[in-house]
Image (cartoon, rainbow, N blue to C red; front, side, top):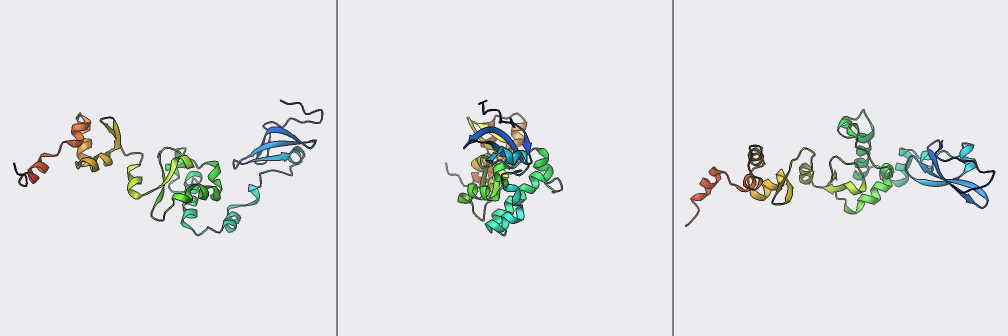
Length: 218
């Protein structure tokens, strides 16, 4: 660590309200610290303000959710309601669906604790007919793992939707059924009975062959 003189007091990793002191900085002869707030933001704060309890957060503590809502004016928008729903199911054990999200370790990124950050990250691809979907259904709500998707895409992306590999290509059971015309129930039954994946996917049922044979000309 750099030497700052006799007046320097090491605050490394000490907590001050919502702030954790990380690195010391000297500005114009006065000691300051780069701090990380619980909300994820970084801020440089004079050490005297930390020690005396003057600074306890990066400023996020001053604005509660209601005040932030008034500030951005989007409380009645669909995106804000979606964001609120995600926060609840990830953090509130009293929410009915908490056990499927926060209860199994799924969280919202610290950046998205602020609605404006969520809005800025997701607004360009937003549409009223799409819903927020996690690409990895076992992953967290963060910009790298979220997209706006149709209900069909979401149904295919459920964590209990089986992935099947055929000729080096991996698709969901529903996608293979759509590709081949063979029902997903029959494909899965065949695979569970030891069929090769290609035959399970592309072998048409005998009754289907009979039903179209009368239209074939040889």
